[in-house]
Image 1 (cartoon, one colour):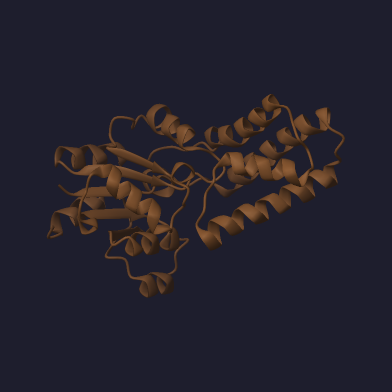
Image 2: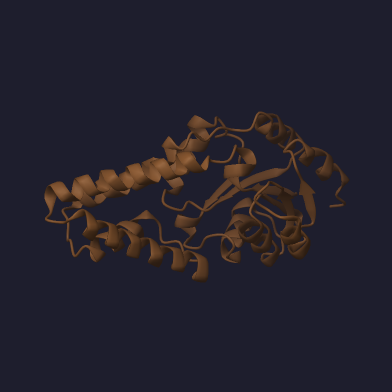
Length: 247
């Protein structure tokens, strides 16, 4: 049995527009500030300093160590940086604000996504998702995949960084996906991703085969240096590439 794993955003869906990302990030931060300012004696500059320190720590843990402790860690760090010990309901509300911002990004499937995945299922490939959840959660992504994208019955496994404890490109998250798919040999899995570092380098470290979904954020110099096994520019090209591979 062979398997194909996918990154979600930018591969099976259209990319999130930068202006929407920035707006929603600012909106959620304002909602959290309003919630805390109403209850506790904090100023906006104090909040913004604490928020920046929180992001700095989280980004270091993710980029330098590959850790992803989930939105609970993000919330706890922010509250610690503000020297606040909140009521349980306040903490939960902050986590919900972080998590639910995912649904405001207007994430849409590509026009060919369903037909390509359906074809692969008919060809008896096992299909998996490997997702860096960032400031949201695996549960939120499951809801997005099942309800917003109508892909809930397509995947044999969905692997999320906040649940695994490691994010791409750490090989552990790829190894977890391999286990969940029930594939013994990692060379029997092709990972399709658009981020050269997170997807291609990470999958190579886990001994997966790699397929780069190229876009204008990746220069040809980067591609030549990293050298994915296969390259596509449109999702529909995946079917032709797969048929040429000697498994």
